[in-house]
Image 1 (cartoon, helix red, strand yellow):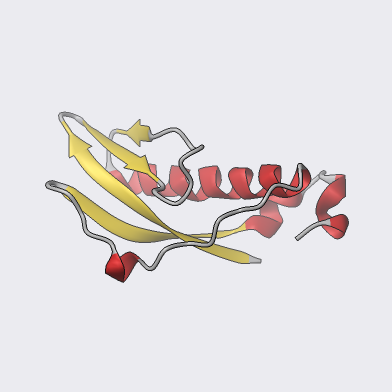
Image 2 (cartoon, one colour):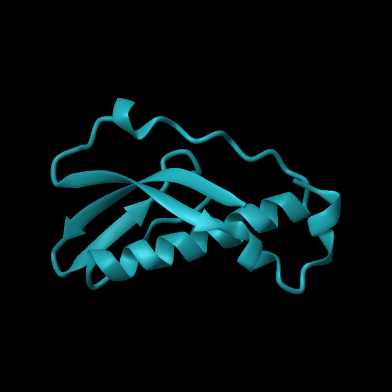
Length: 97
């Protein structure tokens, strides 16, 4: 199952920092370059979604990235992740989502 959420990327000194505005529980994370951070964003989103599903908490709907305004030095892009790969070994998949 594909999940899509907007992420905000910002270059800060020698790091790129990313956060999900719709998912404030996810702490900002960073890496050396945007490609590495974008790959990590897929993983972070997948793990978050499975965790929230397991504990049966509501997951907010994603915002429309086209309606969001980027701050200075920021870019907003959608993160696409297939959460099915994060259900490996998880027993609750068939009872929730």
